[in-house]
Amino acid sequence: MAKRKTPAEDLNLNNIVSAQFDAAAQHVKVPKGLLAQIKACNNVYQVRFPVKIGKNYEIFTGWRAEHSHHRKPLKGGIRYSSMVDQDEIMALAALMTYKCAIVNVPFGGSKGGIALRPRNYNAEQLENITRRFTHELISKRFIGPGVNVPAPDYGTGEREMAWMADTYDAYNPGGMDNWACVTGKPLTSGGIRGRREATGQGVVFGLRELFRRKDILKSRKISPGLDGKTVSLQGFGNVGYHAANILHQEDGCKVIAVGEYDGTIYNPKGIDIPALQKHKEKTGSIQKFPGTKKLDKGACLEIACDILIPAALENQITQQNMKKIKCKVLAEAANGPTTPAAEKHLLDKNVLIIPDIYLNSGGVTVSYFEWTKNISHMRFGLMGKRIGQAQQEGMINATEKLAGKMLPDSDRAALARSVGERELVLSGLEDTMSEAFREIAEIARRKKIRDLRTAAYICAISKVARSYTELGVFP
Image (cartoon, rainbow, N blue to C red):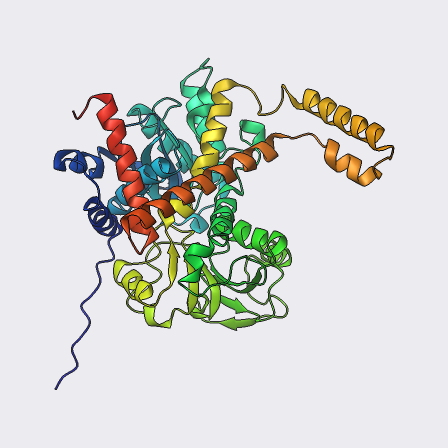
């Protein structure tokens, strides 16, 4: 008898997000018409524009999707990748709506991208492409501090955001809030301390919250605490590097594998993440890092570990490799890295999955802080910094006087240290991630749902539905 073939998976991210939405919608008491409104992508703008590259002109295709206007402005990154298409942008815009709702950031969801491979262009060419795309967004009102606020995503960073902000400012001379038109900017262009590492830091805060929860960990036979846990990482870009570095430096985790597009490096005794970053900056690759063994590109997903962090692109864990996954916790730092079939298989194996729509929301949270800073035209902590420091000094002096003893200089300096912008940003991010996790976990407990993804979607749908109802759009 011939062996039955496994049906081919639907890897369309838009269809996957839609199916995840539908699975969660069964658990909420929301009218069907309102559910349809929440699920639908409101606007999609596709543009084709020419840019001179060398002696010739190339035609580029870009998109900006606006998923939901229940909160304004809309928020979402700009992605540069040869794999970008309209369905992906629409799906990512929807995920942004749900992320913002989960972490109580008052934005609607949006996303944008250009179909190109950044490595194929030099800095001057990328600047011309970015500025022209920004011009197209301006002409259709798909960018603006009160309308739609882009941010970095895969293939873009602070540099591209500075170009976009400068272009917007040139088209809107004298606008007081012009630099709030994008987030993720360099500090010198209105950025905020802590934004660069925000998504990776948010991943760590989410993991810390999970590993405090003995009630959740016990059923999976996972010990609490991150110290000594082994980590395998896919993607050593901005998100992956910062998540791995913080887990390595601050939480006592042992990062045993790191995978990139050109292969995986492995060391069961642990990889020095700061040294690996310096090696990558020097050589342009993680390969040939001293003390590591080279493995195939996908091996980082299949290595036995406590925590697997996919921090690259979508559809990385599928029917093709799901039976080879040997982690206890799957922490989705990327958008949509796990297909529904693979998720079902892993849940049946009692793998604990922290979903992307919660775990990688650190970036948009700190983007909200940056946008607020740009609108207020005031650096966080500036007004109260000296007062706070003086109060701390006064408390220390009074304590020493009552005790009749002097504190060591090192202890005194630590206690008297003033709180700056970065500390305030990270404090706000930690509180946001912790509160959101507790809310998701409570929904899962109350509704007796086994997976955190469905619970997170229920959380998001309920909040967006409430917003529309309060606006009077639905009675």
